[in-house]
Image (tube, rainbow, N blue to C red):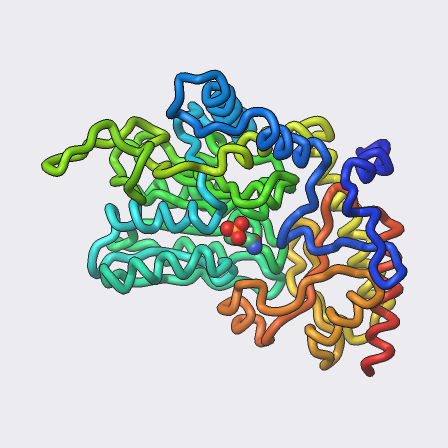
Amino acid sequence: MIQDIDRIREDFPILSRQLYGRPLVYLDNTATSETPREVVEAVVNGYTRTKANVHRGVHTLSQEATELQEAARRKVAEFVNASSHEEIIFTRGTTEALNLVASSFGGMVLGEGDELILTVMEHHANIVPWQLLQSRIGFKLRVVPMLPDGSLDLEAYRSMFNTRTRLVSCCHASNVLGTVNPVKEMIAFAHTKGVPVVIDGAQAVPHIKVDVRDLDADFYAFSAHKMYGPTGVGVLYGKRSWLEKMPPYQGGGEMIESVSFEKTTFAELPFKFEAGTPDFIGISALSKGIEFMERIGIDNIAAHEHELLEYTTGRLLAEVPGIRIFGQAPGKCAIISFLVGHEHHYDMGMLLDKLGIAVRTGHHCAQPLMQALGVEGVVRASFAVYNTREEADLFIAALKRVAAMLS
Ligand code: PMP
């Protein structure tokens, strides 16, 4: 368990901000986590000490910047247990990682009349890139429904496979329901049918131990800014055997071996997928975000967040009349999406903000899931390692006050 949460909080200067004369209670961690000082310092050092473009110069600064970026790649590979750092592609975020897979891999394996399996709880980032491809190719989308507690209907999943199924793309954890999907079993089943699986891990990597080889995921995408890292950086893990066969996603500098107007050949992995100048300073700072998580221990982070989840959920259900919590699957991660009576999510979010509580409102980039839940939007409170029981108490007290004011 976490011993000294005050020490951890000191590492996050933003957490000592006051809003409207009250202490900030930041419960929008699913959208983005806050950033520890060591990550911010790595960014500052990058700009003040080592800024030079990577992989281009023989001069010292360029070599230092390159080494920092490549050390981050090795760190990420080790963190998710990839076979090789060459299987780690840096992107702008989960969104770009999923667009890369859809465009390059999807374009390679999906043909007209084929089928792709998604789930009802996907973020738009794991729906729209496939639809863009669909409009070019004409394959069919199959959507796995969920059970009343917010877990996936695995029987329906298994029954969706047929001879035209070419690919599955599924979130590891839902950004609305908190459901942690049994992706290892889902991948194993898909593989018995010869079908590769893409995992959107944006909400899993910050909260649970992810081992891409143990999962046997073909692709796994996540974002640095949700895991105590910098903004603007994401990761796509892909099995080397697939990455080698895939066409590049974008063209430009860095991703080529040689260029002529007659014929261009492409660079080796991972650079084939990294056209142009990457956010090399952000990438190197991601190392520090991972070190922060490793120092505390991912199991300790998970246990702490789970304790806050249980405590808050129990009190909300007992003390807030008319509350409906969306997503109660066993083993869910620390996300509480809810509505109270007929109150509008937006009104509740605005009033909570005035009491210093930062929660998110709306459809959470999951409109198909909102339709399945029969709502237009929900309020979402989500926890990270630095949140405390006192903050949970402040949130619950504020919510009770807001609910009373609105009713
Ligand atoms: N997938 C899920 C499950 C998410 O929660 C998010 C971020 N809300 C994304 C994808 C997109 O991540 P990003 O905006 O960092 O690209």
